[in-house]
Image 1 (cartoon, helix red, strand yellow):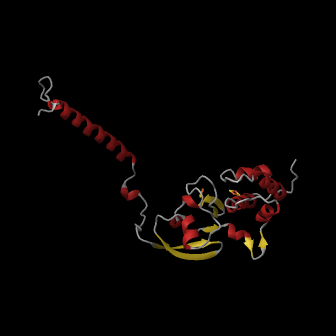
Image 2: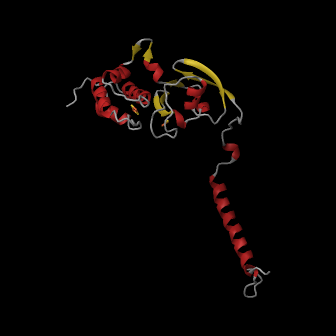
Image 3: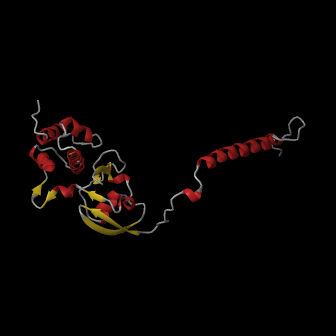
Length: 209
Ligand code: FES
Ligand code: FES
């Protein structure tokens, strides 16, 4: 059966289908030309060695200790810490960068460990909530949480204390409002915010009104 789109047009010898195919190729060529023009030449790009898909050896610097393991390149820093190195202070809750339960310090700055690959964190100092306990001695931040009963299930707590520690290290004179701003990326599903505020005010040596 004849395809109506193959019907020749007004005597110029071009079918509708051929015209559309031709237009599509031209449009694609235009788009590709634009894209190629904006992409740097391959020889200018940094050479990244191909890795995986199998496990590759990595070395992480966690709480001052070098810890080696082997992970597939797709493994996040959070999963490498928890599932391969048994550093379980950071928690896996949303696993998509929205709750802050997995917060760790990388180069002294808080990051979501679920949004970074373990490979990327090599040779950089990582600190987790475990670094805030030395033997029996609790750092002032988790101690304030304990004193003001600022947790219920406790799943969010390691992320909160690590993020809070980062604010106080960057600015030991931080105000309660500075600290609260630094906690903007952390969520407590149990709603212990009022007790956390008590802890924050005590860390700032201020009385809550
Ligand atoms: S588990 Fe990483 S942000 Fe929620
Ligand atoms: S104490 Fe349960 S989520 Fe914060």
